[in-house]
Image 1 (cartoon, rainbow, N blue to C red):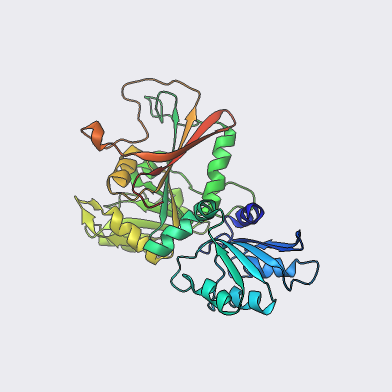
Image 2 (image 1 turned 60 degrees about the vertical axis):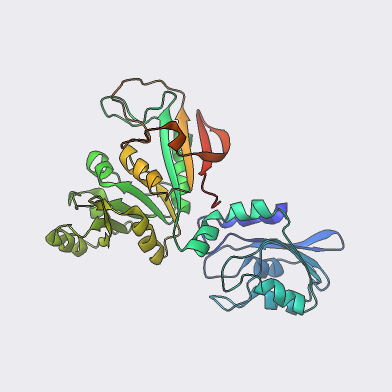
Length: 360
C-alpha cells in the first residue's frame, strides 16, 4: 500500500477533479504489476496496473489506495475488470465517498467471491485525496491559505515592498502548488497594488483559474489578469451592487463575472464557495492579503494553511501581517490550527496545518 501511495502522487496536478489513485498487483510474494491514474478521462490506476503486468494475474492480490469504481463514467468500471481478471483478493486503502461508488465497488467484488480488506493505511490514503474528499462530500472547493512572512511576522516592509520575502526554492514550491490546484484567489487590493499575473511559472505547468474577489468591480481594465485571459481563465466575484456597464465591459474581454450574495456590503465568501463548486472548481490556493485572509478565516472557508517563514527580521509597527482585518477580540476566539507539520525548503521553513473544524 505504501508503494501504491507513492505511485498515486505521480498523478498530482494532472487528473483533477478525479482522485489520485495507485494500484499494485502481487502474486506469489512478488510485485508483478503496478500503475496509477495518469490523465483525467483516461484509464484508472487499476487498469494501468493490469497493462503493466509481466505475467498472468489470475489468483493475484491487488492493493489499491481508493475503492475501485463500480459505475460507468469516462471509463468502464474498474471493479468489473478486477473480476474479469480473476483477482482473488483486493486490499483497499479507503472507501470512495462518491455516492456513485460509496461501498458499491466493495460489494460488487464480494458478490463475485473476491476477498476484500478495507482500511489499510486509511488515514494516509484519505489525506492524499483531501481535496477530492471535501469536494465530493460538500460540493465546495478545498481552500489552502498560503502566506509568506518574516520571522517577526511581517509580509512586507513598512514601505509596502514585499518581493521577495522567501527564497527561490520556496517560491518554486508555491508554483508547484499553483500547478496542482484548480484556482488561485486574491482580493482586488492585491491586483491594484501588485498587478500580478497569478500564473504557474513551471515549465510545462498548468495555469489555475484566477478568482478575484472584487465586490464593487474596482479592478483596472489594464490589469494583467484581464489582459491575459488568453493565458488563464479569470473569474471576478462581485455583488449585485456592481456597475452593470463595468460587468459588460469585463465580459467583452472574456472575463467571467460571478455575482454572489452580499454580506456587510462585500462578497459573501460562503456563497462564493458554493458557486465555484458548481463550476467544478475543487481546490483553491488563497494568496490574498491580510484583509481577505481574515475574512476567509472568519467565514470558515479555509481548510488548510501554509505559512512560509523566512530567516529575516523586518520590524515596523505599520508593516503588514498575514492576517489583518479587525482581528479577534479575545484569545479564546483565535482560529485554531491542528496537525502541524514543518519542513525546510531552501532557506525557509514551511509550516502546514488544518483548521480545527473536524472536517479533515
